[in-house]
Length: 240
Length: 202
Image (cartoon, rainbow over all chains, first blue to last red; front, side, top):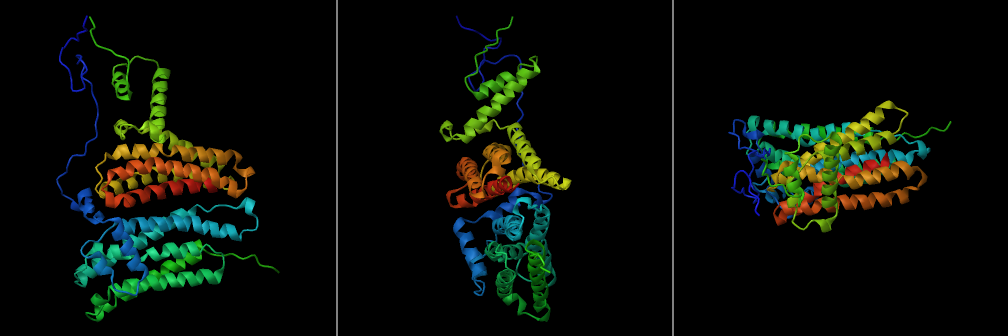
């Protein structure tokens, strides 16, 4: 004997349909009309059009900072993957490494207190350096100083300039003052030279464009001072 | 007369279909069924042998599982956090909670931007379920961590981190084109590294 439902039709799964329609809620993104093109995912997809090999080459260009090869590496294909994940890695290293450095110095290791504020400060500091400052500088360079470089090109360059700090900050975990200053100075030199060398063509135009070197150097110096005096400050016990 | 054709659920999607029909069952039965659903998904996600149909089961995503594991992890770690200052308990809870949800969001967004065709919530669901091994490791360290030397504590941390990362990497890597796999996988690795680090140090 066959069982018949009140409606003999079968739905796509082969179940016999009943009178009650099954209500399923599905989230399907509808394409929005682009009143705000910068707000859509499609706009940002053009900045993720790179492969793993490209990222490796760009990081290599950044670490060998004295060679002005970055623009050749990038071409027209600026990316945001590098700046985003390099800065997030640096945040992790600052948080973990900063606390680890203090832990190594601490005499009473059982009662070591972790400083969670490092997380908030690291997020603010690194994302400001990797995104907010380059966006401001990029807007100035593109719209006021009339360069061919776009805002996102500058963001990409700044992001990759931070890649040397991944290695520098890991080395800064060593709790010796002189060693930390040495590594931070190397990182500062590398990062600043990278930015200046790759903006050299733009800066040679006239005296106004040369002045862009001033905020670049200032912000980089401020960054390593923040690293040293907040995350890797060494408090020595004073023997009287 | 009621001629509805009710079969026993053969798989999870049929179980879901029946769920929409039963509105008069007791609360405990509903909760038990939800818990069984979470356990089923957990086994599916974390034990690679269960995945014979290439992740199709994940289309029935839910966020209850991820929420439960996120809360469990945040509460375990904040319970264990240093109690001399009251702010560090709430700091830890807030950081873990935000880290898991914002982290899952950003990792999924990254995969989508790299060209992966995946439903947003499906991916967040998977990443949330893969937090379960980190939960186990946090519980182990919370209860017996103070009696163990640091090197011995590292062993469960590394095992659980590898387990989480391995479970989710397969899925994430399958979403994007071949030359971009490492770009999609590295954020997942960083995400679980962050969480494992927290469970180690607290």
